Length: 466
Ligand SMILES: [Zn+2]
Image 1 (cartoon, protein in one colour):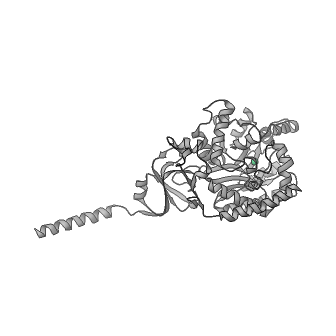
Image 2 (cartoon, protein in one colour):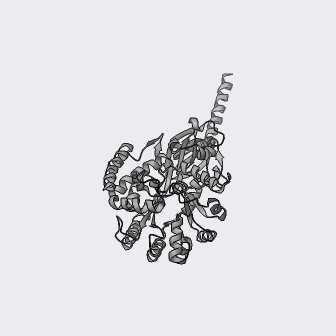
Image 3 (cartoon, rainbow, N blue to C red):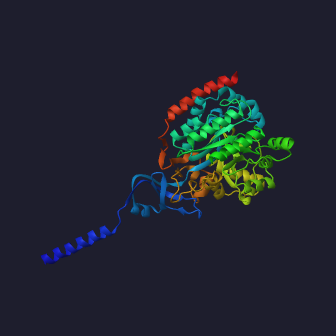
């Protein structure tokens, strides 16, 4: 009997050991994010509920059920967000980061008055490398806290913006501004172009920064400058960012001076080329839209800025129908007045419905697309970011859904667009690095960023009062 029992134990031990050796060793990876639902934004718009994202280094290596991911991988760090929604980091396709320093400085004006009487003079008196550094840190803090992981920018001293962006850990498509009149970082457009070239050379191989050339607009640059900007960008294979057809005034200027729309004028001088992003595109004709489509131009829609400055309503549904790569932006905080992309999604949807008197014009699903994969397409980065898929860069966020305003929850996509706020973001991850966990920002010292901004605001207040 005893021998039999021993034999049985021996056999059981063999079976157990064999069973273990059949199971493959779990691959060690850096991070797993487990969520109540994972909104992938892949081509099939798959939603996993629950789901998990496996990350190794800077890349997503797999998205699957929590059980499947746990069986295959052993992560050195895990973010448990089973009571939250996991989604791709939001992509802000148009802003001017340091302009957070002008938040609330001049409201309730039309664009041309606002720019020429308030913003351009304030910039002439206050913009410096230190101003840009402090402003960008504040903007980066706000973006991390509200779930933006990539942003497109155009401003002055863009190298300072790039450095602050890299330190904060955000991804940026950053354009050095070129404008015809003397500005803080360039007395002439030629100087601005030289700056842009030095900037592109310094950052073209950076893992987080895509340097770009940013002529301000067709009405603030002459033909030679516009052409030189496009040529510079093409020489280095970097993007061009420009404001386009933002107001009816711009269309009038273009018609008076060139007998063409802004879009057609820029085509007539050979400006449009690859990797070009046009911000606003509010006042475009059907022919303009065909031009933009033909040249593969990305368009950044900025519903809040357009409403606040009463610039108009961009024909969003027509853009989408025409197949133009459309992204969403906040514009600078001086005309919004924040960088919250959740609000941008909501307002994009409401504005399109209101302007067309069609409640189906821009559904929640489409608004979310614009802020994620659509923005990635507009920036020409859809192979790298914009969705949670194997092989893409690990840019993702988690969002809490426990607030009274988010209860009950029937449809996560509806909630993300119609009731969620930037403040609901819990975790922000860029390039596989956790920038914020449980609302604690790790890459910036929150208290000192805000104190520095308040100190600088005192100088802005004094400068504009003079
Ligand atoms: Zn702008």
